[in-house]
Image: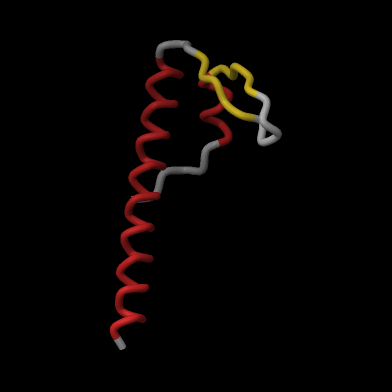
Length: 65
């Protein structure tokens, strides 16, 4: 069925995009941690705070290939 195929293609595309975003985020945090920098993040309630990248790196899931 054409609709199901397009849905599957969109799901695969979305998965690739999210994988790329996660990879870029990890690289940003790792680079910032190596330089001893902090990053600005949201606490999920609309507030922002500065967090040392080394602390943030501890909260990220392990990178999968």
